[in-house]
Length: 132
Length: 117
Image 1: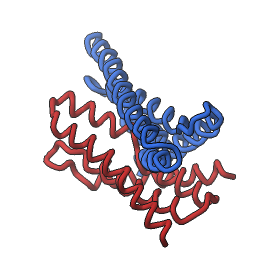
Image 2 (image 1 turned 90 degrees about the vertical axis):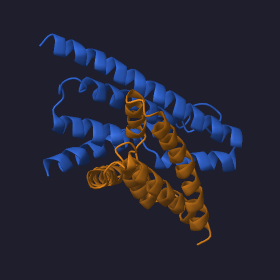
Image 3 (image 1 turned 60 degrees about the vertical axis):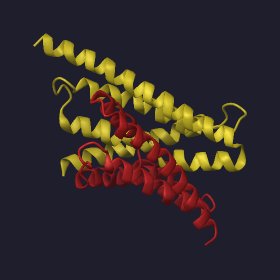
């Protein structure tokens, strides 16, 4: 029950932050590129990678916090449904190149940042373990 | 008011995703089926909603709030990093391609179905 509450409250914060980012980036650039979702998604990839890496060797972050922050907040800050629909929209209203660019950038940068976050977290986690 | 609708939607979206993650086990221990399931179903339903309705308060509640939180991009990427770490290259490639092609195709099919309703 507590776990569900942690996830729900995190989800509340994550979705509101995502909305704020999309409002704040609405007037960026001239192209119809979905900056808001893109920024929320790649930021989330980095931080979820970092959290996951930190808990790799030893449970530094307790489970309820991990659930609230990781599964709840970061899980909800990032979104796949909006990403898919925006890709279809870019194809329809802009061009297949813009749609392709959006998918490639999200996939590439997202994976790179998730990997970097995980690597940094894991380094830190090893240090904590070796220091007892 | 908009913020409140999104917050409530986000609360339930995240809980539903967590519930499904607890119910669906990994297929053969290598394929992150729960995230795959929520991302594909969420893409279809959001496409459908965008097809049937003009942007209203309901779109914010269900689309940005619930479905935005129900689906996730960060977990999808970190799961791939985990697959890389375990040298499960083929499942990782399958997971990536099926998620992108499946998600975008379903969003498109959802949009057409909603639009023609």
